[in-house]
Structures are given as C-alpha cells and as structure tokens.
Amino acid sequence: MKILFLGDVVGSVGRTIVNKYLKQIQEDEKIDITILNGENAAHGKGITSRIYRQFMEIGVDVITLGNHAFSKGELLTTMVECPNLVRPMNLLPADIGKSVVVKEVCGLKVAIINLCGVIFLDRVEKTPYECMDKILQDVDADIYFVDLHAEATAEKQTFWHNYRDCVQVVVGTHTHVQTADECVIEGSAYITDVGMCGAYDSILGRDKEEVISHVVHGEFTHYTPAKGEGLLCGVVIDIDENTKKATEIKRIQIRPTN
Image 1 (spheres, rainbow, N blue to C red):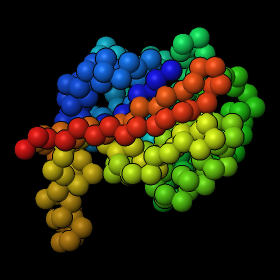
Image 2: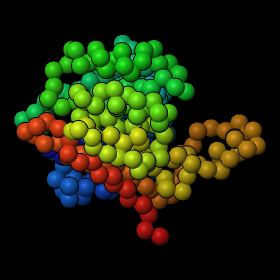
Image 3: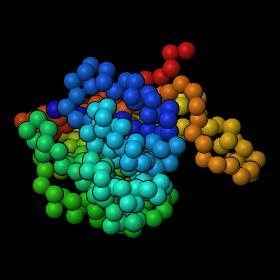
C-alpha cells in the first residue's frame, strides 16, 4: 500500500500547484490513497465546502485540518456535507464534524486521525495523548495514520515515540517548513513536518512584505497569502500489507524551476 500525504495547502497558489501535479504524482508513485492537510486552503486560513469538493473532484480521498479548521464560519454548518473532512479531535468546538475517518484500502482498514498539539496553540481542550488512547480503544483499524498538527518539534517526536508500537504513520503539520528527519523505526513511519503547498517566495505561504510590516514595523496588517510560483511538499509512505507495518517514507518537494 502506498499513501500520499501533502502538507498544508495555503491559498489559491497551493490549490493550483496541487491541482497541477497531483495526478502525475499519483500515477508515478502508484498511490492507493491520497490525504492532504487543507486547513489553510481558503485564502490562507480555513477551508470551505466548495474547496473541499474541488479537492475531492481531483482525486483527494481525505482532508485533515488544524488550528484554523473553523476560521471560515461556514464550516460550522456545512461540515456535515463533507464526509471525508477530518478535524482535530481536541480542538474546540469539539462537537462539530469527525476526527477519524476509516477507509478501506488494498483490503485493509486505514484510520486517518487528526490531532492538535498543546504547545503554542489555542482552543485545545485535551492532550493528544488522551485523544489517541481513546481512538485506539474505540476505533478498529489495521493501519493508523495520524496527522499531528503541532508547533513544537519535541512534542511531535514525543507523541510518535509514545505510540510507534501501535501506530504505523505519524506526520507533522502546521509549521509549513519541510523537515529532513523522515524515518521508519520498527514498522512506524515519521516526519516532524511535511511542509506546505503554497507560494515559494513567501513567509510560510504568506505575503512576505506584509509579514515584515507587521513584525518589524508593528503595523496592523491582514493575513494575505503570497502570490507567485508554487512549492509542493509531501511524503509517500509504503505499508507492507502482510505485516501491516511501514517500510519506507519518502519526501516529495517540487519547486519552481527558475
């Protein structure tokens, strides 16, 4: 089994580059299931049901979110119309949508799980450990795939090491910068951050001049996604269908050619 996961999609540039390369990657890598983090897909913060449907139409199977899950208020009422959209289990409000989706892939049940870290993130009511323990108790699956949306590298690594005996994949999202620490240990695959799909010449996908104006000069600014050519970041994970263990994780990064 081959799983493709694409990192945080930021704004229209991110959506465009995913649309441009997704089919090619799926064909070249012989992908069986495609997952992406779409929490920044709508103008840099949040997602809408319309964008959700667009991703489904181009071949995405499941979309995970993060701390900006409900930045577009529409989702509070339309998430019920998005069955393959997964929100962090420990993010408030906790009673909207679902945090686990189970898909049958290559004859196996794959649980796609979304959790938030607690360090430097707001509106998180439970630790990811409390949530993961409950999921392992309640959700019957052959493969557990976790998108841990968190800021601190140590928090992500600690979570993975705590669960690597029973979880086949933990991918980190949120910081938008792809890390080079992908590894497989004893059948469990991990990377601290998958990176983003967004504008290459930017600050985490955001307009760099706006960020500089705010951070350096203290000016009030709006959150504006950057324009220009796109960067696509992701990982491909191989799962042995017989042992139900991860055997390889490979980074993907597509940059502008100039």
